[in-house]
Image 1 (cartoon, rainbow, N blue to C red):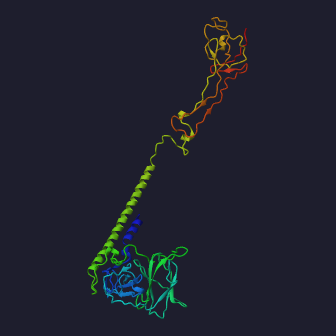
Image 2: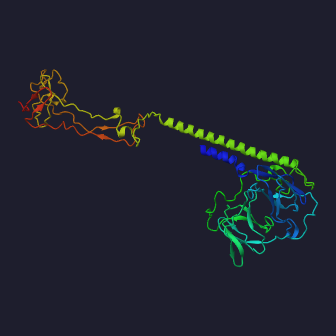
Image 3: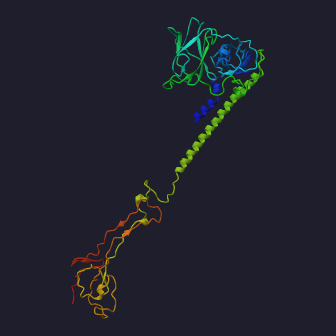
Length: 475
């Protein structure tokens, strides 16, 4: 969080960190009229302004009459006024430096020379040529991180040759030449790795003791390599476009007067060299507004980052609090497979076996006894009571021959106890989806209570143990 806050503040003050001072174009550029440039901030004088033609010439037959202007500020002055010897509808870029290095004051975008002046005395119709020339290999091609060779004829140069990379609206710098080498049929020069990002417009300026750009300039767009983008040569000190408003304040960049800052200039340029009053004040206000706007924007961004961090912390706290509560599961689903109690039925749904009572035979004295039925017993001496079901009381008043007395002998019922059969227990699902899966039928084994015991078997009851002998047929 603190790192994000520091990043936001650094971005807000980025223009102030990069440049200790700035410059402003104070009036509308017009052909053969004076153009005023003023310095604001804490630079290190003396200052210098380099005006570089940009784009094609507007004159017929492509006649180029524009020269690169290397203009020092007078003494330690912070104001420069010079005659702009460029035809209308042409463009130019201004680079301002102080004693600490090239381009330390920033680089403007391509400003447009406006119409309205009929003075053409400052330029003719003759093609201009540089004091000496330079070349690149490959020619007219800049590829990111792909080295090119910049070379010239040393016999035509005067003194030390300097090479500069000017980026309109960005960061311009002097190119470090390293070790100079001589190549046959080329001349003296060096290899430059082109440490500039793809898509950036670059102007190469070469000059000697006669001034910056005395050998002319070449304008190219940095391109991408054929195979893949190579970023090995890029670092923090590589020239690049500067974020935010370009240097130079408010000046026209089109033929209709529209340009940076929405201001096409505050003066018409009378040509007396002193037209820097109201224009400089307006430009100064524009720069101050841009700086204040950047600071306010950085503060707003910082507040937004803090709010987002607080929201994330609160969301995380609520999530942690929600995890401590246990939800009530109405279906008691405790296992991962969704079945309650590990697949067991609830207590009230568990099946219980159906227990059939032991068959009983009523005796003549009114007591019941547990005996197995013997189908082989004779039915000739049986009374009517012998044909009753086991466990059914004897009817009173009926004997074997229709008398009112019952039989004197007790015989087992020829029908015996009711035979048991398997019982199906079906679990109904009226209570809801408490049990997942298909229903199943539970089958109970037979009781085997209808199988008789052999003769002489001993029947054991809970009360006592009796050895009984099956009765024989009686007469």
